[in-house]
Image (cartoon, rainbow, N blue to C red; front, side):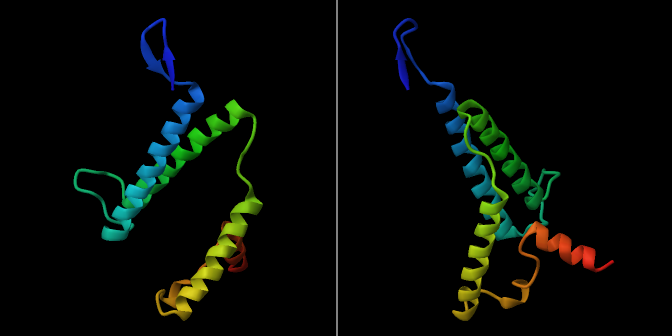
Amino acid sequence: MVFNTKEGKLTMKYLDHLLTIVIEESSEIIKEACKAQRFGMDSKEPGQDLTNEERIWNEANDLVGTMELVKSLRGFGGFSREAMEAKQQKIKKFSEISIQCGRLEPKEINKPSSLREYLNVKNSAF
């Protein structure tokens, strides 16, 4: 934050503004994920038209949209399919450890773990 002596108030740079929105959107994803965990992905909050799953995706899109603005402002960054797939492999590895510890049910672990794997499974069914 910067004190604007001309107007006598605190102001912020555009990047700081965007980073605040990143924080807000991240917390909204957390909130919606907690609701989905408590009430189910397919349930709808009273008075809402969207399921918890749809609300999570909406918030994720808001976050990605904001991150794209950060990227355009900074001229750096972006999403990497390689990095995302590496994260998916890490999740799979630690999920298997959780199964061995008796903390995770194994029946869903064999579902496709990535979009690429899902598309390969789907295409092989034809």
